[in-house]
Image: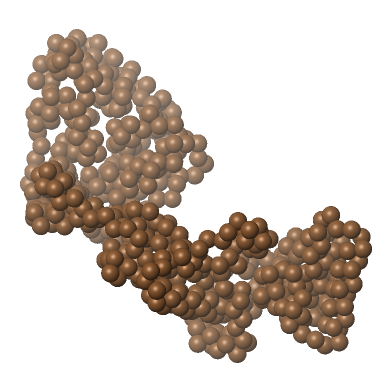
Amino acid sequence: MLEQMRKSSQSLLIYVLFGIVIAVFIINFGPQSRGGSCESTMADDHYAAKVSGELVTRNDFRYGFLVLGGAQYPAQMAKQQRLKETVMDKLIERELLAAEAQRLGYVISDEQVEDQIGEAKLIGLGYPRTVPRMMKDGKFNYDAFKNFVQFELGVTPQSFIEEQKTELLAARVRELLRASVTVSPAEVKEDFLRKNLQVNLEYVRFASHGVADDVQPTDAEIADYAAKNEAALKTAYDERKFIYEKVPKELRLRQIMLKVAPDAKPDVELATLAKLTAVAARVKKGESFAALAKEASDDPIGKARGGDLGWRGHGATNLPGDPEKQLFAAKAGDVVGPLKGAGGFYLTKVEDAREGTIPFEKVKLELAEEKVRAEKAGAESKARAQAAIVLAKADSTKTLKDLFPAPAEDDKDKDKDQPPKSAAPRAEETGLFSPKGTREGAMIEGIGVSNDLAKAAFSLTTAAPLAGPFQVAGSSIIVRLKERKDPDLAEFEKKKDELARDAELTKWIEVLTDWTQARCLEAKSANRIQINREELRYEDSGEPPPYEPCQGRRQLGG
């Protein structure tokens, strides 16, 4: 059919000459072209990928990019949407499926492809589409077809037919996999019930970071943890080793701060300075700097931690230029100040100094302290959450918002100078939501990802509305069912045929994805997938993006 239309369209000589001009134009100036250098003509040396012995050429990649609408994307948007990475994923998937079709004995002829084209249809990286631009006056038109594939897809008609042969081979295996998928009426109903059940939860978050500064592990606890967990601490050190390389001079500091308002009168400043000078005298007489920080400091975080600021570099000591220079000139054990700094006067003790590359042994106890503090803070937040759930169960007439109300406006004004961690736990509300899965797990609106919490949330009833605590992103969470909206079974009866088709499609996509992923990983582990990452470079980028095949289904924008 195409041959007859080709002959009637124009003379062979004009067709050949025109084709040569178009081909040269596309190679030199089309999307992804690299000009007229010899590099652009050596197709075998400049492949896009190799999959189980099959070559995915640069032209194949260009075709895939264009068939997914790549020419319509500005470079920045294409990069944000990870369009080229998606094209590579789909080309690999196509080659794996086509190879399986050939193994099963499928063969696609030119005539089969031409019949498809004659209906103005094509398959682009697994997506069937109808192309009205291949038609004229409601019928297939060879000239319109030729212009479409040459100008919009950057391939010759015969190259397009070869691409479609591969697409049709891959489609045969997709059809086989789809034929194997069945979904029972019970599964359809269960899926409907799961997706249409909605709950609205009250919840209270007890953040462990909110109590971490109140936790003071002893030296013995830190040393014991370090001795029992040295391998884990070494792994933590290796993971953040870059932090400990080429370190500029840092000081381990404790600090007592007395506030002075920006508009304070001179006599107020003098009185504050005198007060801190008296504290300094007590330090000099031998009193514990940490104990005095807890007693006197106006910095709530420092006060809780006995004035411990950890390691601080230049510009992070709360002191300006000359006072900070004075601090960095001090030796370990020196107490410097009082000196005026950001928001008040500071008395600072230099406990240690370091610079250069810091070995593991020098930071082991520091890492251990961090871990012990986190574990203790987690245990404390969990204990507070457990006490809260007991309180809530003791009086079923009260909601979590009754027990843990938001602060009144007056209280907000009172606490405005306090860091967020000091705020008392308060109840919040998710609003109605349905089960929602992500790659990380089940998502709970407003709370985060937790499979355990999700399972409990949709099992709560008015008779048993409370659950928790659950550990989510470093916090202990308790929840109370406020509202439950059950699925409408009458709606299910109306739509069950449509829902069955949707369920089969969803299951087929899962089966296809799992099959492709398994074959891809198998080929990758056998070193039968090679990627030319240069083909993934975006026009506005100096380097190609990071890319690894077989990372699962990559959707545009995800």
